[in-house]
Length: 183
Image (cartoon, rainbow, N blue to C red):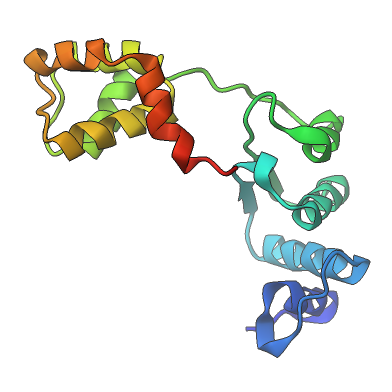
């Protein structure tokens, strides 16, 4: 149902019950905060924001407020952002004493094999996996683009195709990714 109490202020930002969004004002931030608190009273709550480096100012304002005020709630706030692209709006969240920064390592060959198997019709050969891992350095975004290109071209992920993957220059992979990124 609709939020109750102070959480009703979240109706505008969420577009509930015909409420008009109220933008960045404190009522919206407060309403969204209380909505999260009410939800975490029902069950532990995970709020995950991927690509926080692309988040708008109002969203980051709410996430910052939430992060500063949920000490005693069963709530975990998780943000994902690209290293070096956090910008001045994500930096305060990253600098909070409660924040734990967990850098992600590139995928290993086993992770690459799993991702390729999920993306392609056929399980990849070990040498194909090694070549794909070498071509992408284990970067999941590049690996996904590589898998998409392999599927588009109808290339079977075999030992023979490993040579094709190994010959793809990394700039070619970047060319596949660049048009998909926001300007």
